[in-house]
Image (cartoon, rainbow, N blue to C red; front, side, top):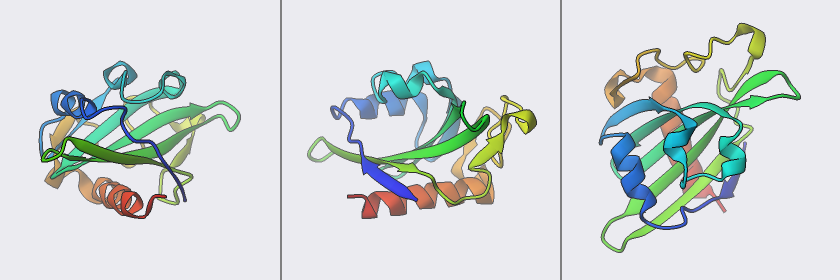
Length: 146
């Protein structure tokens, strides 16, 4: 698993995440909902994203098409926002080793991300073992991100 720092350009990104996903919830969103948070070059490749918001942490599961591998890959972006001083820190998690991270395009229904719920939104408690694992992976990666 690789990580790289990618801090939001401003604390204002937090309000975008707040609008997209209430506290202790998860929600699927389109790439356009992430405009201004992530680089346009990444969003061009994104098919769908799932945002999870718990405490001060926001983990986004990015589903992007890997044309070379003819596969759908999942990458994570995790951010934490500190309201007391309007600060934020974040990182991307690439090439993770979680189950379902890469799925052949032949076997993928674009309506769902592999191993994640098919409903459009829900509570963190109803995210399932795989989703909770991704949330914890993201938080741990941020704590160790250089």
